[in-house]
Length: 231
Image (cartoon, rainbow, N blue to C red; front, side, top):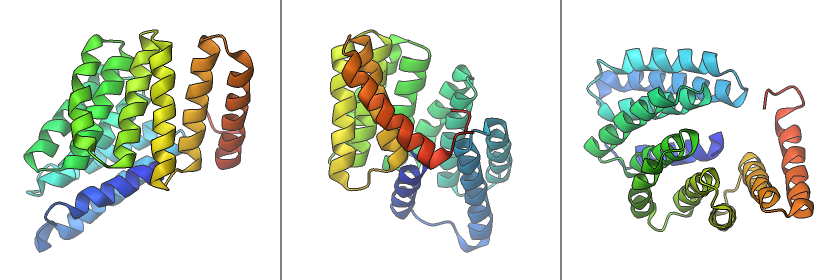
């Protein structure tokens, strides 16, 4: 998922829970600014720097009584550990995030943790256990098109890792369609999904269509990121 979509979901989730008490409002806001810096660093491919921002945010959030911000920190920690290839640690952080989100009744954050676990466990680590989070993610998504898209994308990734290419293609296309229907499809999300569909088509032997879609994805990425981005 791209950063803008993540911010939209974060704001939506924050609106559904009680705000912090006045004495902690400034501290919570500062923690969130650190997390925003971490997301910006991740977007630029500076993953170690992002990790430093998240660790600082975690230290500051720990003594606060406002639990929802700790959920936010744990989710960002899981994401950056995934970026760094530290998958076991990412899995632990996301499990902690899921528990915290459930404790504070943060539905969107629960969904993000569940789909994150689907990806880290089922795709990055190629474990069948990743799919145990699928039913939870689907239930939490409900009628929310962006959450549905995220669920489809994670399901597709697991299917691809397992060699079930038809299922992978179906879910990647469903993810793209849900994002488009939501009216909030961002360029980098489109690029990622086009690339994933193309990769799946290539694996299925449809080389011409795969090349066309991956070229579209590369053009979007170059336009948005520039030619020097590490990815």
